[in-house]
Length: 212
Image (cartoon, rainbow, N blue to C red; front, side):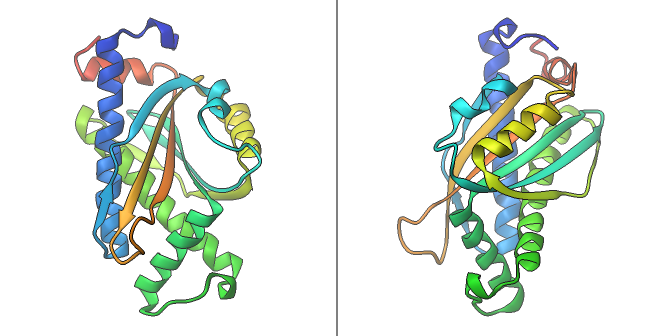
């Protein structure tokens, strides 16, 4: 895989646009899942070394929820969706309210049910993000069953670097905030998508986009 410094501005702009398109597709799918209108802030998309992930987030001791999936096929990659626990709980409440038709206090929801709901949200977000990329470059994917973890942000990112770093050392980070209809005014939900392409997958992407 090429070093990040070897990508020119045109290629970096193309990669960022892919991140923006993927996030927009994920927001649309999330809106359908929750049956609520969603308004997404313009995503911030960066290409960074997998070993520098910690420098691009906040408090390393904050507790977060993460959903992991692995994708094979033409554009092989690993994807992670991360939210702080407050936003995880709010997203779980919104999904369960949509599914059961009534509000359930988060402290009354069994952990297994919360993780199942988080897995469903993460799977929709990451699958939709990946679908947009595959449609853009004409490839297909086979996504794994999602895994869920709760831990300190630093611990999650250490696992990402140690496990997924064996498959690729470059990560595409996409950070955004969404407003969901029905929430109190000004309340936003943050989400972070990390895409780690397999070796040569970024080059494939750039060739398909005709910027390499």
